[in-house]
Amino acid sequence: MGKTLTFLGIESSCDDTAAAVVDSTGRILSSEVEGQVVLHAAFGGVVPEIAARAHAERLDHVVERALATAGVGLRDLDGIAVTAGPGLIGGVLSGVMLARGLAAGTGLPLIGVNHLAGHALTPRLTDGLDFPYLMLLVSGGHCQFLIVEDVDRFRRVGGTIDDAPGEAFDKTAKLLGLPQPGGPAVEAEARAGDPRRFAFPRPLLDREGCDLSFSGLKTALLRARDAVMANAGGLRLQDRRDLCAGFQAAVADVLAEKTRRALSLYLELSPARAVCAVAGGVAANQALRARLETVCQALDVQFLAPPLRLCTDNAAMIAWAGLERFRAGLVDPADLVARPRWPLDATAPVLIGSGKKGAKG
Image (cartoon, rainbow, N blue to C red; front, side, top):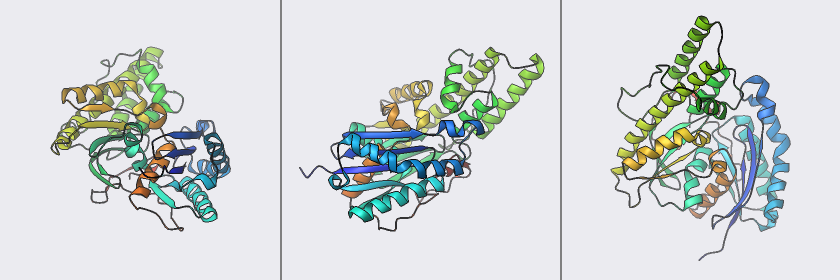
């Protein structure tokens, strides 16, 4: 057994300012997250300039709290990991510059982490998964099916060609007058709604492969809302609940079928332990989780969803991914740069469209 390593992680790719301390045994010694919902509430979405300014003002305080909660100082660390992309460039740059300064001042190794890799490697932090496993990364800015083959090797077998699911949930909430973030609001309304009342499309199910599309579904909801309002002279509470339930059911149907197809590709590898993991903010949706778990059970595949606090953006996953990269000999130079785009699978075709975090990685 080698020395237990302890890493600081810094995350600032969108609208959560986060820092965490994690060690190589998988212990999360601290995980601090400051959200920005109040700052962006009046705008119906994340404003990049406001987010970047908030990160610059808060990052050092969040890092100090993470270190204090963990009971460690900078001299007790073995490395510093930071989200270097993809994301809103102002926020990513704020985190990278702080990490560069800390690394320069302490002489600690600096590890730039792909934000998506942080999500994709979270099951190894929480459950010690062996490679390979299938990961569905589903969030406000991204939606991809990845076969995770190694610490730095990811094979994308499908992804969204336009809006990410979380972005579609947020836009749906805005169209129906619900608060942001939209995912929890739509899910709450859907519980009392009739998912069969509105005939929403299931985009791309008529095409082979694992790619997804949610832009047309959002447009269909807009038209359904307008038709209801024209006929009834407004939008009643039950109308809104039914629209939310129908929208959520359509997203669940699409993700379930595309997951089944992605699993078929993954199972061709004959993994010793077949596992399908899900991460990202939308993974907190209980209805979607239930559908995905049913698909996995039908194929005798273990379904794994990390704790909700590790599904949304956090720095513990960044610290862990940095540890994984460090142990693999992947250390970055002192002039690490921030990257607004950073595909996990550089061999896969570029995904079209952009979400709240910029172009799809």
